[in-house]
Amino acid sequence: MLPGLFSFQGRYRILHLTWVAFFLTFICWFNFAPFATTIGKELNLTPEQIKTLGICNLALTIPARIIIGMLLDRFGPRIIYSSLLVFSTEWH
Image (tube, rainbow, N blue to C red; front, side, top):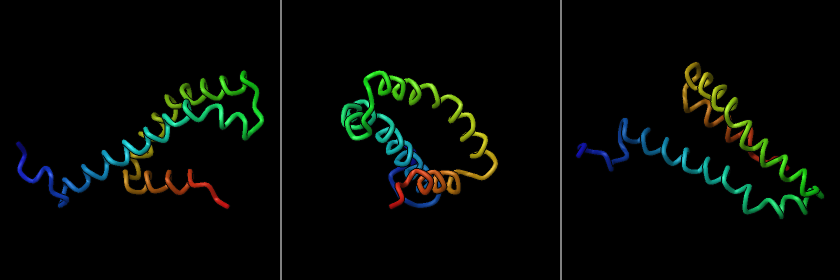
């Protein structure tokens, strides 16, 4: 076992923050399916439009991952993930 793996110091801190961020991202992404009917009712969408949103939700992840990967290589995970959180926050 790696010593310090369960600590929150140094490189292990980055590891734990990264997997938590990744986990939260997937929880948000997978929320579309159970909330699809509620989203459809709130936005007055037809069943065909809900299906189109589901397809776009899946299909657009491929180019998004490529773009985010390139941005991560250039600017680093802290800046990019923080920017994504700010961008995806609903403003009132």
